[in-house]
Image (cartoon, rainbow, N blue to C red):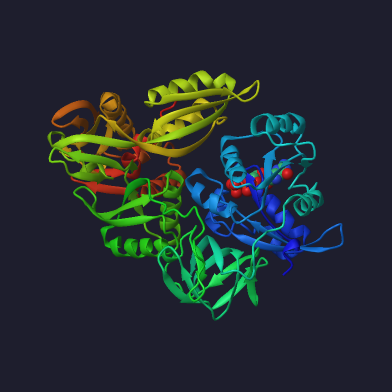
Length: 601
Ligand SMILES: Nc1nc2c(ncn2[C@@H]2O[C@H](COP(=O)(O)OP(=O)(O)OP(=O)(O)O)[C@@H](O)[C@H]2O)c(=O)[nH]1
């Protein structure tokens, strides 16, 4: 294929600014999608993604476009995940492109996440050009948003396209800009094969499907390839493109984007960022930028019904086939029995996996509060990593503990700066920078312990800024810290699954806060339930749930039978998510009470 007629591009947008809608419009305008298919957002493949309105998997679609210059172009649209947990995947997808559309909601403006991805694109020398979307909204302010883009990002907006993905305005102009502004790919089709893996997933019929951008050389069916990170070799069974349905092609050559199927059994063998080359004529050096992504947040997952342990393990194994950044290993809890300690890239990743387990695999779960990974040096000089509060050795055995820090960039309208600073200080933050981006928008940069972020930072931030703040973060380093284990006792018995690692200075507050929240979640039972928080043997807070026979029907008046039945059903529903711990029934909410943000007083 003539490289001059190829354009590889991606769409960068903050969540909800209209990336998926625009992608669908581009497919429609170029006749890639039939009318029947238009109803759903095609690029958001998984049902879950559609429901949450989040794009998780990067995908590549080939569009054919006859431009105003009379030539027919091949446009490869490479979709990127739009969330902070998936920054590495975004960076690999971007490095498969020469250009990117920056879609900004003209009624909102530039957000922190948009910025992070734009900088990723600019760092990789992509041609980035702005599209102002949602121009159909009465509240759209394209001129204000244009000057924001110029001031904050430094992109020229003089010929930015003003569009509405929903109303179909400006779509032709966007396609023309892609042809004119995105440079054609370079690369040598006769050189040794160098292909970048920018996505891979498991398909139960085909095995692992790898999405690649061919940098140099070409690849065909029947050839022997090698994955350079692990040196494993495979025979190519199929090469093809998504248009948007999969179509086999004769070969994929330098500059092209498509898929390779090579009988690979697990995604972990075809990791994003790895380089594929030929076995017999290998390229000298793999592409730079390959990184093993590691789980950063851990949580315990336990089946509510212990008989479901095996189904849970099967489900986790299936999920792992498709997600090499997710990890799990068996874990025992005195309170919850047999379960698994699972590792995730971040909180969103965690929520997605939990939801999939319950929805697709039908396993009812109890989830314990998330924790980060601590590095502990014992008095004997041993180094251990601790990703569960129960594994934290007793104080007398600990020489030092280090905890992970992140660099957080928060964007807020200036009226909220004071409250955001107060929140960051409360969360043990170290201020780096406060920058006025425009007259009304401020960027606050803080070094923060990840531990505070996984607890309730994000929800608190949203709540104190009425949803106006946006957050982006990157991992910084590990730092010495004074941390202790906070134990929770229910009727005098420590419940291991409720333990937390907290900062020494926060322990009192966290303890009081936790028991008072738990009191709200634990229903009254036949016996009185005492909830205590303790550090070592020292109890620092206590609340009591009074004994009462739980009789919700007592609330009903006048014998309204349907209402009564409804309440009973509701009660049954609530039961499902309860776990018997000793003599007390604890609902799921009690295990995650620490994450719940209290109503602002
Ligand atoms: N009024 C108006 N609404 C739009 C336009 N484009 C998208 N939307 C709406 O904005 C919402 C978000 O659009 P999506 O396309 O799902 O946004 P996205 O950026 O892909 O979001 P993520 O997939 O979560 O990153 C949807 O409700 C769309 O219908 C537009 O041009 N005008």
